[in-house]
Image 1 (cartoon, rainbow, N blue to C red):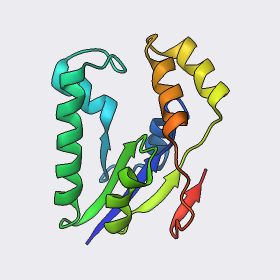
Image 2 (cartoon, rainbow, N blue to C red):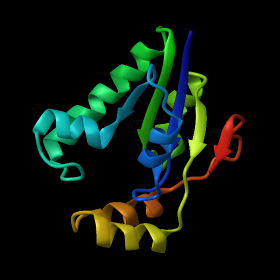
Image 3 (cartoon, one colour):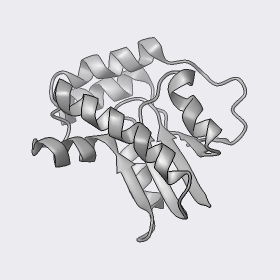
Image 4 (tube, one colour):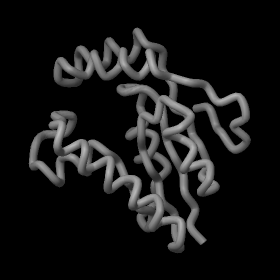
Length: 140
């Protein structure tokens, strides 16, 4: 049976860093920025609309497939809404919220990412919904 982990939180909070920290050599890491780079050949964090649409479609299909496999699967996603996190809860995923406040994320975006990432950070915080009934969540 699959062991699925969702590492989620705002852009520039440290989700990919946490995924790299917990990943073992046999784990499969499904991270949107890396997937976009693989599809488009663009530098990490330089997203295109079509590229992200393909990544998002593939991401959902990979979760459905992973549920029926053996092994550890680590998904990394912003997932600001409960609706976006629900498929992972339904799959029995361990939920790991990696959180940094808006100002910290904006500062990181400004110094480490393309300009549009400041908008991504603000959009995440504007859409964020907390989980009142998160049973297997871990705040890191």
